[in-house]
Image (cartoon, rainbow, N blue to C red):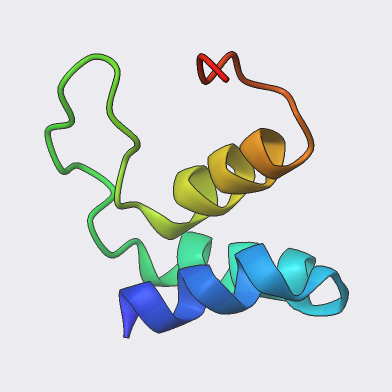
Length: 62
């Protein structure tokens, strides 16, 4: 379910705000320990990070 929510938020800008809100309310994996340099599986963080990367906000070595 968490993966599905994140994918909706990442792929569909019209639903992004709603997906982030749902993720915040559910709090699934909010406290999951995430190593440095990895993306958190907490949906609001995951959505924002992947959208940032899609829009060229990360140096991905390409």
